[in-house]
Every structure is written in structure tokens, then in C-alpha cells.
Image 1 (cartoon, rainbow, N blue to C red):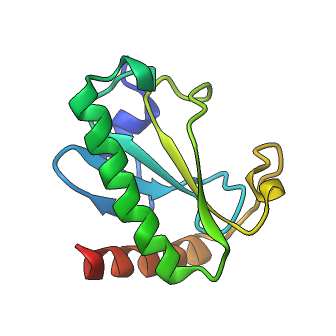
Image 2 (image 1 turned 120 degrees about the horizontal axis):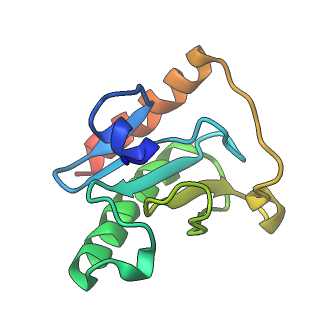
Amino acid sequence: MSSIFTKIINREIPAYIVAEDDKHIAFLDIFPVAEGHVLVVPKKEVDKIFDMEEQDYLELMRFARKVAKAMEKVFDVNRIGMAVIGLEVPHVHVHLVPINRMSDMDFSKKKTFTPEQFEAIRKKIADAFKKNI
């Protein structure tokens, strides 16, 4: 059975996509811990990050870095935090979160945004990503 991320990749369900290439996709988390919380996902469905082929893992990290660099241009924060937890969806995904302190990565505290706010955030990151590639 396809994961929810595979359904996003296949455009079966909508998402606020900020970046994409042949092997990866990045989109806004709809249950974000901070404004601009992005999920970076390989298009190839693999459950656990360390089960990925080494080359695929390295390419995922390279793509996530490009997305994070675009995010740095959009958000006035100390850094872009990164987490790989992998319990919510059985499909590898990297969380990129604009943060100023450790507590900004508290996954038990979710933020809410309107569809218009999500779209505005998506556009800012997508535009910055396009300028960087």
C-alpha cells in the first residue's frame, strides 16, 4: 500500500510543494512545529532512512541541503534544524524547521495556518529555491 507521501508524489492528494527533482520532493508539513516546516522525501518509497542505498541517501541529503539553503534566505532565524524521526509515516522523510532555539523543534507542539498562509510560505521558499539552483 502506498504511503501518504507516495500519494503526494503521484499527485493523488494535494500538497504545498516547495521543490522537486527527479528523485525527491519537498513540501510543507501540514502539521508544522514552526512556520516553514518542510518535509523532504525521496520519491522511491523506503521505510527507514538507514535502509536506503548509500547513493540514494547522499542524494537525499544533498537535495535537503539545497532546500535548507533556500529556507535560510526566507526566514530570519538562527538556523534550519533537521530531524529524521520516521515513526509517523513509513516512508523516509527529513524534517527541515526554521529555529532559533532547541525548543523550536518540539514535535508535540503544532502550529496552525490557513490555506492562504501555507500558500504564501510555499511560494517564498519555492521562489528562493529556484533562485539557488
